[in-house]
Image (tube, rainbow, N blue to C red; front, side, top):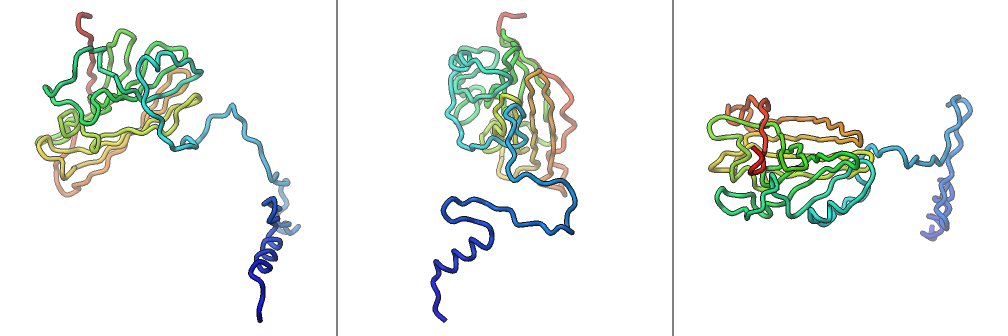
Length: 244
């Protein structure tokens, strides 16, 4: 029996509650004996004052800005931006190959800024993205997140600072909440072809200055002792020249 495909689709669409022209959804009637609770609204408005519970809705990565552009931004709450010209402790010299600097862009960093606070949370590529709280004069404090055995787990070495072994992503950029995820691989200082461990750290920052951290480790060599660590326990600081 011959029939029109368009006619069939039209009948199917109408039968399931869709109008082909406006694509308006009509909820199917619920049998009276199947649900006795309150009526469910088909459309519910989203309160713009509520912080989002998931990632940013647009996954297009913004281009990095300069520190000068970051300083000019006046935004409420808390936010994060990638910059292209950051140096630890306000260092003004060139980051040359002694000691070896991070590949790609040694001055790349993600900086979390609060509208009503003077300190910042910095994820610096030159420091393998190990985050620190930075004061206005450039002094900063961070935790020593990793110290392993047999030449492993020092992400501050040249291999550890490679973008492929340590990288950060902005999950939420503010203003209600900032969420930065840091992933890194535990690699040998001489050969990074066989990582021993994967670490994932989430940093959640709120407008009131509170930052909490979630850390998970996964062994990539479960049958070997390489890469195991007793860190993070110690604290380290960056001090600008002439401040002591």
